[in-house]
Image 1 (cartoon, rainbow over the protein chains, first blue to last red):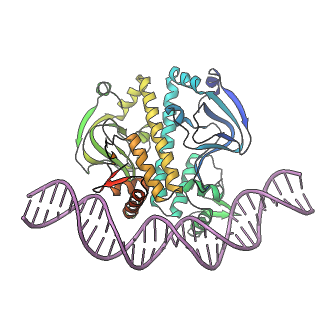
Image 2 (image 1 turned 60 degrees about the vertical axis):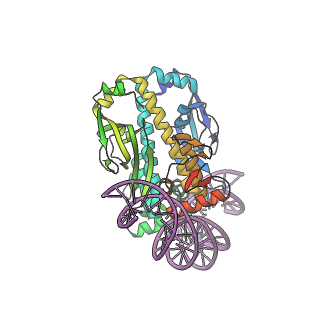
Image 3 (image 1 turned 180 degrees about the vertical axis):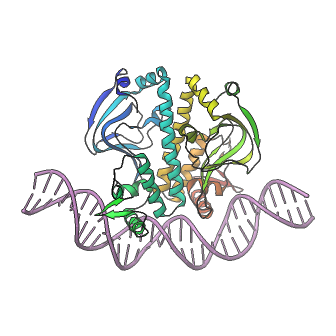
Length: 198
Length: 198
DNA sequence: TCGCATTTATGACTCAAATCATAAAGGAAT
DNA sequence: ATTCCTTTATGATTTGAGTCATAAATGCGA
């Protein structure tokens, strides 16, 4: 996250996006650096059958879509608004100027990319070598550690739908539902009126 | 890749590692920045059944294992020598000093991490939503674009074993062998005395 | 308050990749 | 030349996640 005041010096534009709006599409070239003021955004892919894979979900103060920006490559996934969002957009050239003139920001970007690479590494190994229950539990634990899920007397409330968990872990909804039920029986998590706690 | 001369100013140590040597293990804390002078290194995970997943394979002039270094986190995977290697090692504190004193290097690191994140994004979507043949082909195409596979009259020689392709794409050897045979029939690639060309 | 879309849920069935078994080819070391 | 290990290969069988069908609960908007 880069301070709003700094972004303002580099021609930031604030835009509003309604739920389900596509911010950018897979295959297109990057034009902006994006940072979320409010709302929720997901990055996703669809395969030929229309099956979705969610690369990540982003919230307030998080940025997304930088890798192709730095590489002058096409986006490998699309960005879609999940909850009405206000987003700060800095034009590419301007953002590169910001980077060059503010070395301290580079370090922050590095930490941010490193964090996302870490997540991808863990999930890649999970998705390719572990059973559904393991994958679901890992994803949940990762989300608790990295998103601001609320904790109450029952534990952390996992603010994902079963479908989202499936799309993030490469499983079908039914499989996620069954895995969660089974994990509840094993005492790994709780289901309290359909909501998952851990 | 950071110039050797610069690394030398920050207390670089050159080490030799024999094939199969473990450079660092999953769960351990990072102590060095690593850059390959010669040889080949893979980063991998094993699940409880001993099934391997290869996060990536690294060659001359490439660095590996930086994300946890920047985050002060444990390694999410191990690094193992595939072919006898000479590696430049810069102690962590010293490397951080290098970064702070050389802003231009930060940009390079950013590009490097972005490139790896790009690969992970593409492969994550592949592994979780596509059939074996698609996964194998994508991995091969990615490898051609990013590793220095040699091109001759038959096309690019894919310098991976079937097992490595499987461990990189989350498939079993037999499945990879069958997928490659099928892709050959479809004319997507060639098999010339057991070697794969594309 | 009614209607409709979304989310959670469950059972039956299918199928593709994993598993298991076996073997041949190739390469490296002695 | 012989041994041993790795890699490629192929057929038969199993299995677990996906698919399909259906439905109830919930919540949102008109």
